[in-house]
Length: 178
Image (cartoon, rainbow, N blue to C red):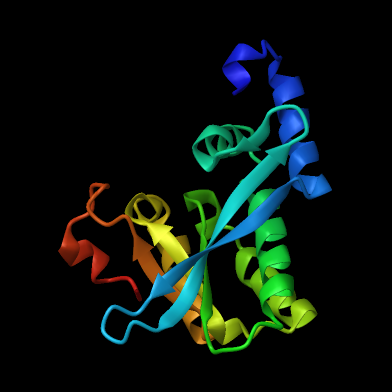
């Protein structure tokens, strides 16, 4: 999307930041079904963007620039907030799964932010799941361990997403609390 617009780095960042803070980014809920029972288990929360000029923009088009411009924390927190506000009144004991980036995984404020969102929205923190990619745990292993331990202590499930796409051996991954 941005390659054809001939925007400067600052203009792209400004456009992305405005989309995230204005609510043009919104949560889509992809159902997760228990294969054994066929019952709805939860939803993976995906970021969507409706741009007034370009219309619907897919995550593969806007997530990489958001990551490149350092806006993932803003997007993730906005998405978590809006998803929990929306889903708190839905019936059932489903979970909400959120993808986080490697930078967020080692952010010392992540766990506090999640606890605050759960408290403010009333969505039970124990019905939240954080999905991390295999590549997320390669760097800053001590900080990753600490974040994962804290998330587990809060009752938040942690899942390994996209296993096999990174470089970690299974023996190394077994050391983490997934």
